[in-house]
Length: 178
Image 1 (cartoon, helix red, strand yellow):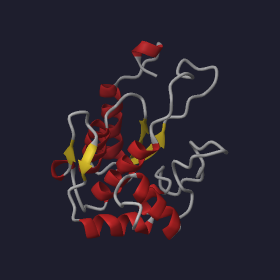
Image 2: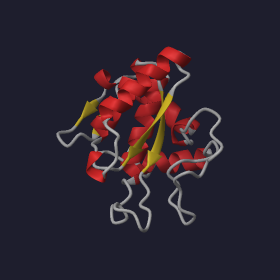
Image 3: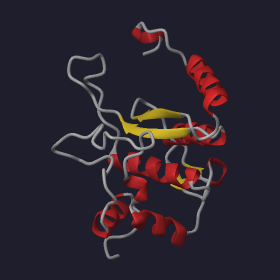
Image 4: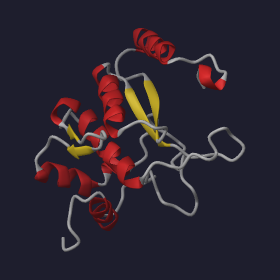
């Protein structure tokens, strides 16, 4: 949407609009969306999430979905593993259980430690909450970036314990024996 696409939007303009909205509507009554899968690292995604949380702005998460006929139709979707790690980091930040400064990242920007003990991390994972739709409050588009054939990037319901277990294994938080 920005200058490289011939549009008028800039990050600075977006941030100005968020600050202006905060002065009108107040803390936690402003939201923005983060589309994951446009070339950012997990660290960059978490930096944005943390910045928004520090400003008392809600962040909705979307997985990039290529649309036929657009300039980005050939771009792939983000890896599900990466998206799940960002979803988990998002929940930890917004619930005040961790922060960017407590997390660790490898040289490529991949999350390697969420900055919480294993019990807290697994309890949150098994609750299923991190993997649920994170749009605007009361979002009425639960399948906003899903393909009918899957995979499910955002669950429009609380995932079952079995589904949460599958996500934990896929992210490498548990071995196959668990």
